Amino acid sequence: MNRLEKKVAIVTGGATGIGEAISKLFAREGAKVLVVGMPQDPVKDVIEDIKKDKGVAIGFSGDISSEDDAREAVEAAVKNWGRLDILINNAGVYPEVNSLESYSIEAFDNLLKNNIRTAFLMTRYALPELKKTKGCIVSAGSEAGKIGLANVTPYGGTKGFMHAFMNGVAVEQAKNGIRANCVAPGPIDTAWTHKETSGINKTMEKQLIKATPMGRRGTPEEIANVYLFLASDEASYVTGAVYSADGGVTVAKGAVGGDVPSKLAKEPKGKLKLKHQQDGATSVR
Image 1: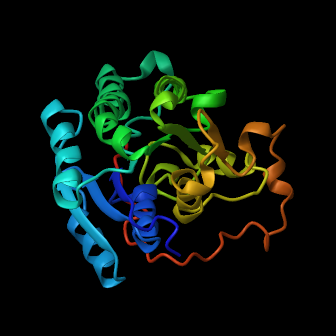
Image 2: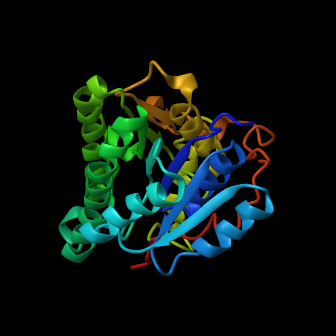
């Protein structure tokens, strides 16, 4: 507890999926959290849960791919709490599952807007404040940005950008005392990995489990724990890293997940009460 005491954090995409877990865990660890989400996201609900847990949080609803909204989000944190220590670039979408020749230009533009432009703008406007606190940035990467995944090729491309982008920020901003890292999840138990709530089919859903050496999806809380480490002072010598939290997907050779005993393939019970694990920016096409 209190690993982020006296810290101020912004969590984009902070009301659904992995973002909800990050927001709630950071608040539990003592951070004051600005939960950023789109107007349709359950930002108020997440804030209420944090306050019930004796945490401190406020919300910002807007489209941070807009320059004005991104700048105002940073300003909101500083106005309320006088500083900014941590930026979590978690906002992103997973709009389509399709082979590249059939992948819609609309979905591609959506990826550029919500996966890349949001991170660029939030980082740009946060840096002046992070210089004052010698703060840090942790951004959402992906296994898809490391190895490439069929049928979500453009999505993987945006995550490859994120890995390189954070590496560049790490090198550029080290002289200012700012650290920058990525977390690269594998298949996590959110709307993005279920056939009912995303564009994957039954075969794809089974394959993503079998391709994971641990034989299961990860949980949002397990990923939030990695964000917590990287955002904390415990990671004071870590910058320019892409931390894989993927159950072994990127080192796997074949469908070894099928060899895991059922008792080991169960998701662990977490401590966070997550209500919006299966919400997020997906669409079934």
